[in-house]
Length: 317
Ligand SMILES: NC(=O)c1ccc[n+]([C@@H]2O[C@H](COP(=O)([O-])OP(=O)(O)OC[C@H]3O[C@@H](n4cnc5c(N)ncnc54)[C@H](OP(=O)(O)O)[C@@H]3O)[C@@H](O)[C@H]2O)c1
Image (cartoon, rainbow, N blue to C red; front, side, top):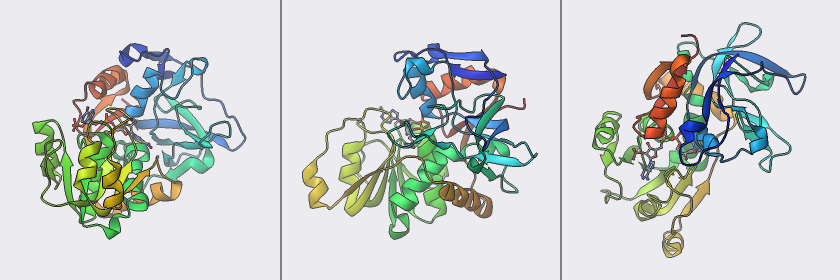
């Protein structure tokens, strides 16, 4: 079957490590696994990390990339794939599709049957394919970890990204005052259209916020600390610009800040997110939809950083 996979690692030029070509059909590591015919998937920064060799070992190559999928199960049901798989050998106890088990950027993907959720009526496959990784991460950052129901104001850093646009759209839909930073003036204009107050990175906000959504890391972390109100939660799920920022501990204890790590979300949280989007009419921010034949161009677009929202791959085209 056709697939997009890491054939080697290249830290300096991850696009050179990507191959689009034939890979073997999925196998089932256990009896409760099923094969899903993929209809739509979306790219994540995670796929670029994989091509750089972050989280993968050379002996795991070739590895089919992709964490997100919407497709059809063996009984003909339209399903959303929850991408977190129990993985006893992994220190986390779990892994995300494309880390230990082949990913979703293929004609077919195998997962445990319990990882399938029904595609809600009214939600298009291309939209739902944005939800299981970036949007689920943003949902858990805001709700379970950030306790956004106790918050009035939220700051989202690096707001052009997949997780970040999700956090902006969800926090606005939840009725919060949302501030968002982006390095790019055009992206700031689009963030404003989503209902947030867009500012340049590092800008002083009109108020301190109760929840900060951090995926950028070193480049923005000091601003996250300075923007946080007393007792605020700074929720971290990524570190695109570097994972070793300087942290002013005086500010952490004096302002009684919580710095919380988080990764992905639970199946219950994904079901809640799907229901929220279906019932509230919230739809993912989609940068582009490309046919599978142009998946390499889609990776280049993500790598350029010139995206606003999610890059979706249509596997039916
Ligand atoms: N832990 C998890 O479960 C989980 C799940 C999903 C993602 N993540 C992580 O979260 C991060 C974002 O993922 P994504 O898929 O949303 O990525 P993405 O769509 O590629 O977005 C990355 C965004 O980060 C900002 N950025 C990058 N470099 C920056 C810099 N030097 N200074 C300021 N801003 C910078 C950019 O925003 P502007 O251009 O607007 O400034 C960019 O749009 C990645 O590191 C990813 O690995 C983690």
